[in-house]
Length: 316
Image (cartoon, rainbow, N blue to C red; front, side):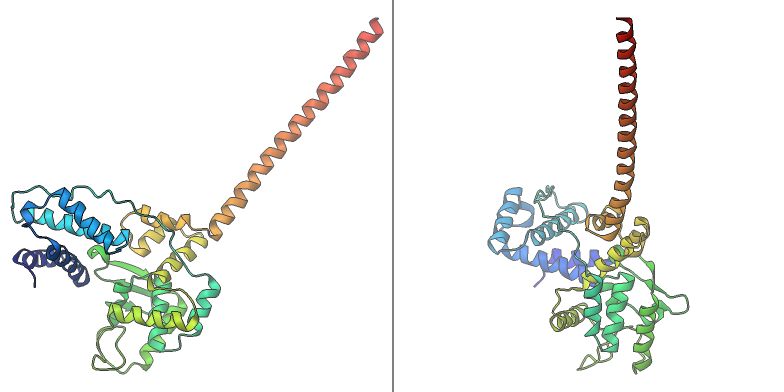
C-alpha cells in the first residue's frame, strides 16, 4: 500500500510527463525502500542509506540495480525537500558506487541472418526488423501507432521517447517491406502498430514484456544470446562501421549526450580497423621516407670522408 507521500509523488511524476513504466518503476523501488525503513523519512541519514546499500548487497542485487535504487531515492528526497517543503537534508547527496562499464554488445552480420531465419511470424519479423533498422528502444516499439509510420518517405515518428522527447527515425527497405507484409495480413483496425495476436488481450497493443518474451523465445530457437537492446546496439555499430557520422547516430538513437553514443566507438569494429590500417600506412610511409633520407645522408658523408682521406694522403 502506498503512503500519502508516495501517492502525491506519483501525481507529481505524471504531471512532469514521465512514462507509465518509469513512474511504476520509481514507485516500486520507493515502496521497497520504505518497507525496509523503520524510521520516519525526515530522520533518514547518510548512515541509514549506507545500511540500506548493505541490505541490497546482502540480497545480491547487482551494482547497477543498487545505483538505480539510490538515484530514485535521491530524486524522491529532492521532491520532499523542494515540493513538500519538509525541513531536512537529502541523505543521498552523492552516489559514489562504482560501476563496471561493459562495452555495448551487438550481433555480427551472420548472427543477424541466423536470428531472422527463425522469425517467420509476420508481426514479430516486422517488430524486430523495425527495432534493428531504426534503433528503437523496446518501450518505443511497444508504443508505436499505425499513423506514426510514413511508408512513402520511409520514416517513423517516435512520440514521447526516453526523457519525453520526440524524434524522427528512418526505415530501410527491408523494414518497410516487413511492415507492409504484416499490416497486409492484420485484420484488426486498432491504432497500435504491433498488437497481441492471441488470448483475452487479442487486438490490444503488445506490452514491453510481451516483446521481450518474444525475443527470448527466438533467442532459444536460434541458439543466440540476444536481447531487444542488442538489436539497437547492432544498428548503431553497423552505422558506425559504414562511416556514419557520430552526431547522426546520436540523433537517430535519441541520445541526450554525445558521450553516450561514443561508447560505440570503443567496440572493436570495422571502422576502427580501417582507420588503424589507413593511419598506419601513413606512419610507415613517413618512417620509410625518413630512413631513406638518413641512409642517403650517410652515403654522402662516407663519400666526402673518403675524398678527404685521399687529399690528405697526396699531401703527405
